[in-house]
Amino acid sequence: MSDVAEDIQAPTYRSPLLERPGAVPVENGPDTGLVWHFGNPVSEQRRLEVGSAKADLSNRGVVRIEGTDRLTWLHSMTTQHLSGLKPYTSTESLVLSPNGHVEHDLHLVDDGTATWITVEPGGAPDLVAFLKKMQFMLRVEVTDVTDDWAVYGEAVDRETDPTVEGDPLSWRDPWPDLVTGGAIYTTSEIEVEGHPAWSWREVLVPRAEFRTQVSAGEFDGAFAGTWAGDALRVAAWRPRHGFETDHRTIPHELDWLRTAVHLQKGCYRGQETVARVHNLGRPPRRLVMLHLDGTMNELPVTGAPVLHGTREVGRVTTAARHHELGPVALAVLKRSTPPDAQVSAGGVEASQEIVVDAAAAPSAPAPKIRRLPQN
Image (cartoon, rainbow, N blue to C red):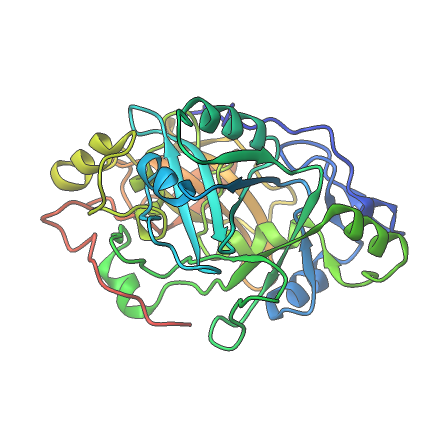
C-alpha cells in the first residue's frame, strides 16, 4: 500500500515566475520547478479561491491532435464518450491499461479544428508515443506542443463564464458534476448534503507570450503557489493523476466515474475491469480526506503510510494546510478499514471524512446515478 506513482517523474523545468521576489520553489515531486508560495500562502489561497489569483500550471504537458478522425479515434481508446463532441465543450477522459489501471488523465477540449489535451508534467511524450502506436491509417496527426504552450489555472463561475470561440482556449473541469454516462461512488448522504464545491479551468496561452508577460511584470501579484492550489484541491476531494494514483489505481477507487468514465459507450482498453467492478464487485481501495491533528507542525509527506493501530492500511497522497479546514490530506485506504476509525498518517493522528463509500456496490445506496446540483 506504500507504492507512490512511478509513471510521472518531475521533468527539468523552471517557471519564469520563480524570478519574482519572494518566490519559494517546489523542490521535489512532479511540480518541481514551480512556485510553492510567494511568502503569504494563506492570502494566496483565499485569492485563488475567489478568482482573483491564478495558479501556475506551466509545467503541464500539452498535446494537439488534428485530423477529421480525431474524436472518433480518441473515443475508441479512452473512457469517455468523445464522438461528436461539440467545439469548446470540455471533458475528462482516462487512458487505462489492459487491466483497467489509470495510465493518463486527459483534460480535453476541441476547438472545432483540433483536440487539445493537457496532461501531468512529463506525461506528454508517453501519451504521444502511445497514440502514435494506435494511429494506423486514420486521418490524425498527433503533436507534443508543450514547448509552445503554457497553462495556468483559475477559479471560474460556470454559469456566467462560458468558453466560446474567440475566448482564450481553456479546459473547464467538470468536477464534481455527474456527467452523462457516469456514476457516483460517494455516500448518498454526501449527495443530499452537497459535494464540496470546485469550479476550475485551465487556460492555454502561447509559452513565449507567457514568458514575455511575466518578464514585463504584467502578472505581478496575480499568481498563487502550489501550496494554495493543493489545499483547494484537497478540500474539493479532486483526484490528481500521479498523486492520488499509483500503478494499481482503478477509477472507482477515486470516484473518477463521476467525471471521466462513460459506462454505456463502446469498447476501450480496460473496459472489462471498469464494468466488472461496477456491476459485480467493490473497489479494493477508497479515497478519503483526513483531518489531521493541528498541533503538529509538520504535514505527512506524499506516500507516507496510514496506520490503523499497528496495521498499514493505506498511504497519504496529498497533504495541505487549508485556510479554513486547517491541516488536511487525501489518502487512499483499504476498503476494509472501518470508516469511523482514527488513523495515523505519517505519524500524525487523523480522522476520516468519507469520499468513496466503503459499501459502494450495485446493491448499496452508492453509486447513485443522478445529476448533482450546481454550486
